[in-house]
Image (cartoon, rainbow, N blue to C red; front, side, top):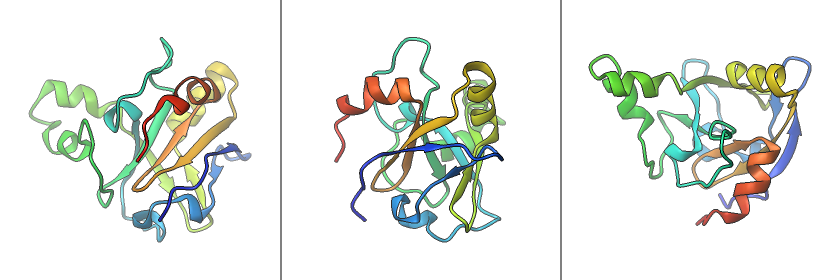
Length: 150
C-alpha cells in the first residue's frame, strides 16, 4: 500500500475518528474485536521534533500485527512491564484504541483529554506504510513536514 496524503478529521459525537479504510495499513484492514490496539507516542516510532509540552500530541497506532521498525518496541514494553519499573512507566503511555468495521477509530483517553483540556476535536491522520499516525493540528503543522518518511 502506498501511503496516501494526510487528512484532517473531526471527532464524531461519540469521540471517534472516521478514517477511510484506504488510509490504513494492511494489518488493520480487517479489524478483530480480540486484537489489542494502542496509540503510542510517535517518538516510539521515529525521531520527531515536537513543540515543547506537545510531546504527547502525536501518536502512532500499534497492534501485535504491526510491522516496521520501532525506536521503542511496544511489544517489548508489554512483555517486560511486570518486571521492570522503566517498562512499567512506559506502559502507562500506551493508550487503548479500537477500530471497528465501520471505519471508526476510538482512543478514548487521548481524545477525551484533548477535548477536555484544549477543546481540540480535529486531528490529522497520516497514513504510513505499516501504521497510521494521529496528530493535533499544532504538532502536525510544526513537525510533519520535517519528517523524513520512506
